[in-house]
Length: 398
Image 1 (cartoon, rainbow, N blue to C red):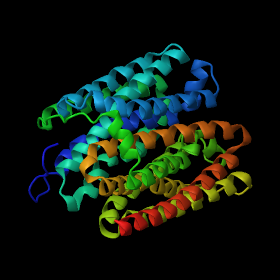
Image 2: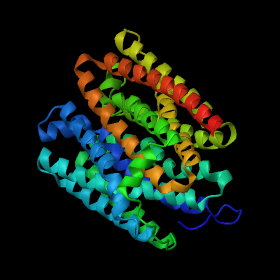
Image 3: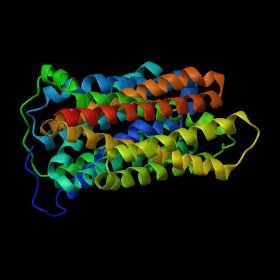
Image 4: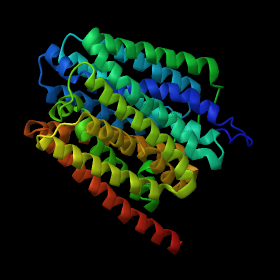
């Protein structure tokens, strides 16, 4: 990767362009939650089965991301980023036109390949172009594309499913991906590729204490978020939020929280450190899920309370990524591209696992779904404490 620019904001400008691409990727990944029941009805499958298309996307992403990083290492970065978004465009067009559930799954596999090629490359490029003291902010800007997608993509997807149908919503994602490719083509400078990192070296990186301590936490924390997220329409209905207006508003509040949590986490990670940011995030996550479980199990209904909790849910979910990536880059600064790609795989492993667990818990009711998410959030807090202590001990010994 090219050396960091001289002291200026130059490193954040490419990050903003790359964020448009991650917005397209994020919209593709998250928009399904807004119309999952409608898609399930159209394809004659259960809501839980339709939700497994999210798990398939996540599993393919996690498995192929390291392989694609090796296979595409020598490609110029702009060429790789363009190709990934064009593949995402074609995949969403196929999903929008899918006549059967099986064709939809094929489209999700192709979309996962495009996302797996784009997101790690975008994150590593932004980190390389940013100054050391603004790396957290650059990562937050790129990941901000994903969080803005949760703020806009999911509620708009739900509105599109009601007004135009879920196929039109996926067609809009295809157009958005094409626009992201055009923006990168017009604005991102030519960047050289790198020497490929063999899979053997990637496995060796996993054995480094600093890396090994962080990646399982990424997967666990994202699993906690996605136990209820992919089934947000039915679980929100269980706490009294349903209809053409209330559901998009609740999802928009979740997305607004996600944007705020991500941006604040990037700034505060640079100021107070990632462990403190994550500690607050996991505590807030556990509290919000426990409160939603109580609302789902009881008779009390309050749109205001659900709105506040949805905002807290989004903020605590997406405060994780800048802090976790910062921990990895500190642990292995000479392998920035490698550890960012491994973290992306861990994110999508968590998304797939959380969606699968949520599908298993859904027949037991929304309270069970939220309670399971709260338990996983508490587990993430315990894992953070253990890995932070281990990391301090390792640093002292060296």
